[in-house]
Length: 219
Ligand code: 5RP
Image (cartoon, rainbow, N blue to C red; front, side):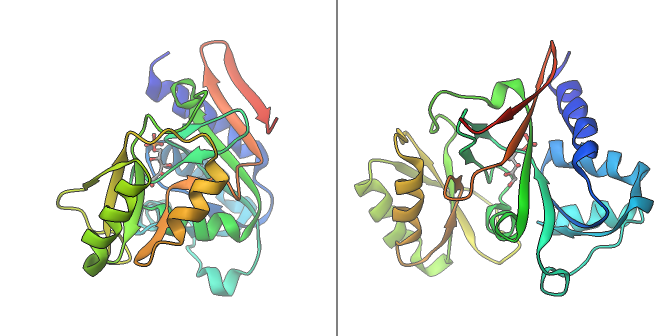
């Protein structure tokens, strides 16, 4: 199976985890497949909270109502992809630049279902450069602080987040303790958030493999 077919397979499998009511929906190519599957059963839900403008557009194009998180309250489930994920279900996210809204919707959800093709499962996080959303005027200061932590920050060229900020992609981090690093980076003044999802990991991983979709829970 191609990587895209594996993404489609996990997106289809995630439909079993969709309750009635309002759900949270992530961003990226795997999440896009999920939105397309969701369209088939849209009568089952009242609507969705989107983690990005792109996701909101795709949901609306399928006629799925997009709701404001403040009006929706706590969500039953959040479904999203990942750039890397470990067997502890700690993740790096933000390859698509939507990390802050993704983290907000995930934090507001009772259950996080991660959908990913098999290539995303790693022993240790950090080969994928860690995205950090930064207030533009803090770019140089935050970059210097990230270098002190052992990383090599690179500005994502020509990219502005939905919140009007920049992204620094941090290369060469060896992330032994994702919970600690997530906390430390978030404490740097000027950082909006970083793409480590370890303090609030996924609850379930649906992993697409050639042998089928595997369901994993945190070890
Ligand atoms: C976007 C994300 C995505 O979940 C992540 O980049 C995975 O993307 P894809 O499903 O296209 O592989 O965090 O900000």
